[in-house]
Length: 353
Image 1: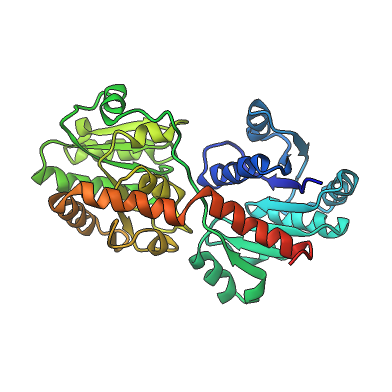
Image 2: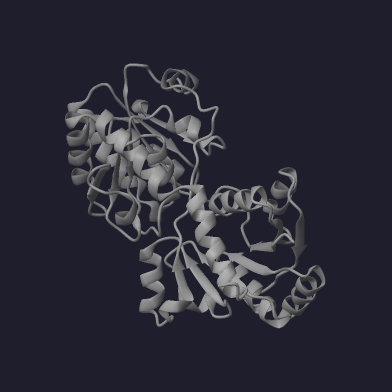
């Protein structure tokens, strides 16, 4: 009989790395024969987005961080549907979903996608940290080590990704340009101000350099103004949110990731999978992803260091770094290993190992 799993999420839209990782896992589980369904929060656009993708979706109304009225209703639904595992994502859905699972006497696991506080996961039978950094962060807060397992998010490059020339034509980038890029939400926590400043330094030595920024956020207009102020406004492309993110990555030569706080950085793994060297900040779980053979780690909020390392890698040869990047993504961050690690946690919770 197929394992019956319900993923519970409070996500509002399909624009976050954590959401894409959850969907990657759900698709892999469905392909492996699992019965997969979703619970979303009423009033969130994400529920309809899931339905448009063909997923079974059940919406519940949550009014509080911990909703004592909805949790029993959700527990009754879990029992009626006879789920084998309740799998939660994000803090609000984890505290409510795992509490409901406990009421229903169904094993629960919460994936911790960020450097989060332990209280949001107090009702989870087990936690999956998306990196060893997240696992250590939870243990340092007093969580018992045997309640947390590190499972890296996996990625797979689509078969229909355009060539570099085709991607650059799509985004109006000259074919002979050296293209630096970043995929991130344009918020202060992602540190994009510092990569823009790094690119300004890079431009002083590389007149053919362009910078492609993929993502939306509340700092977008400020970053546009910063690029203009630094005299690079015509060379910084604000591409907005791209549903086909690999098409944008295909146009790039080197990936900059200036985040100030990061659990793993799924966009960094996607960049590696596309064969892009990465210059990243040395925070959170990023040192587990970016090793010296595929790029470089620099201090957060240090544009000069980021520019120096990017120029060094270009000078040493992007192709060799890129080949090693692709190999690292395939060996450490595959969907198969993500599915296998999650399945081991499920089996443990169900008493099968």
